[in-house]
Image 1: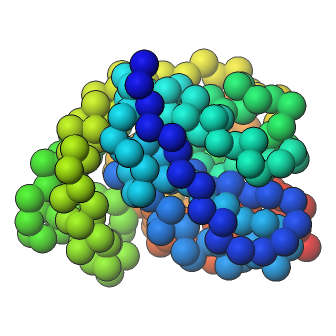
Image 2 (image 1 turned 180 degrees about the vertical axis):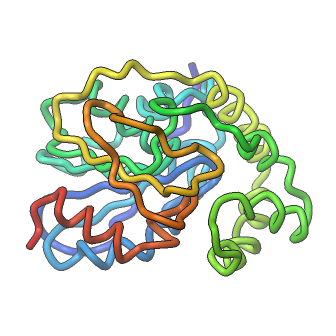
Length: 244
């Protein structure tokens, strides 16, 4: 299975390492509203997974397990005692990573994680690679948040990312795998915090426990709580990492 390397980006800070893992179609830039809340006490990293951002487009079978393998190949650069924060597809990748290297992961914060709750209902992952115009982007991205102002600044960046040669084909492979993904519900060894938007129209907020814990549900919020309600999510992240 051919995989492009995951690409790590050091966002700043000093202290124990924290790694942000983006969702489907996103990249490291999606964490701008969250990194600043940790830089004072942690060394903050973000990754571009294969098929996303500055990484290459060899995604293997496109599964979260494959993407986690690519991430594990570079995670040694981060040192031990690693906390991982993953959104959507990135949440599934984070879980696979924790199973690949359980001795290294100290905490998991999963934001609307894929493959552990209800299936994708909006068709977002299938529509995203076919976006062809700003109007298309506004329509497809509109399901991600309750406030249109949240997604409007993303449109130009999404169109630019889709223009990377081979990117659309890579994303179609990941989308197909994501549509059939399911993870066992056994909690990983590391402590888990789950965060979900109450009004998520991509991965509906589950009723009851996920991975053995009850999600922190953020009202009037869609699939991007780390962007749409960054203050609330940052407080939950800091609490999960025991940052005063």
